[in-house]
Image 1 (tube, rainbow, N blue to C red):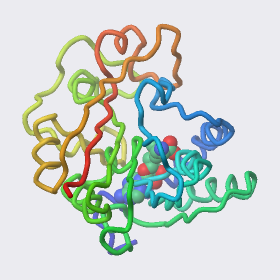
Image 2 (tube, protein in one colour; image 1 turned 90 degrees about the horizontal axis):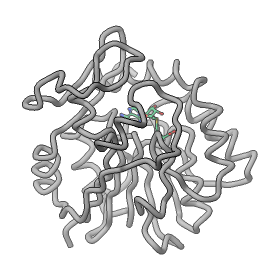
Image 3 (tube, rainbow, N blue to C red; image 1 turned 135 degrees about the horizontal axis):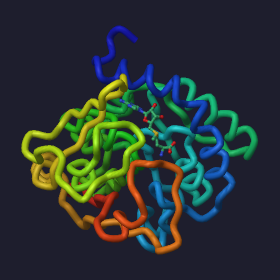
Length: 255
Ligand SMILES: C[S@@+](CC[C@H](N)C(=O)[O-])C[C@H]1O[C@@H](n2cnc3c(N)ncnc32)[C@H](O)[C@@H]1O
């Protein structure tokens, strides 16, 4: 633990504590056959997070939490590895693996340094995972190293616009005003919270992804359905219908 970077240590403490609050959501997601994504449960047909053919593909989930995304991938025939920094989150994942009799590898560790040789995977995915909680200067090059040439990385995370409009107070929804500067945003710590998040502008994502060997294929701005509901207070449906509160980046490792 003491040799982990400071933000990784803090996020481990946070998630070992929060894990119990994510058990029910994990159980619900494991019970689903058809993937839905993000806080609004947007259908796979709308965002296309998964490649068409996953059978026999080597896939890594860069932060798996309770591992429901890994479970959906394994059910589609992929050889999956899920990585997570929280033993408590992985305990839920392992219990659900036993319940559903679904075996894939779960690694306890920091996604910024994954103990696999270069070019081990065809596909890497992250939903509110590495793309939110790990340092992009570390996890993006690590994802590039882990992927085979031509391999794809897909991640879903809060939109940059949401981060500009989100009050610092816990439980208060995003406003229609810009509350903080866009320039210079990178590491974000919310008051009273021990966790550390990372949020990048689109320009910073594009520069980092291209510099580390990725070509950008698509940026999907997620729009929930008019009937969508969600469990968190940080954005209203009215807001999310007008502006993207989540975004999906789809990039490919240069051949
Ligand atoms: C929102 S959850 C993961 C999302 C997953 N899709 C889910 O819904 O269960 C965030 C996860 O990030 C993990 N995490 C944070 N920093 C990490 C790091 N540096 N390496 C690996 N996992 C990390 C936490 O332990 C936590 O399980």
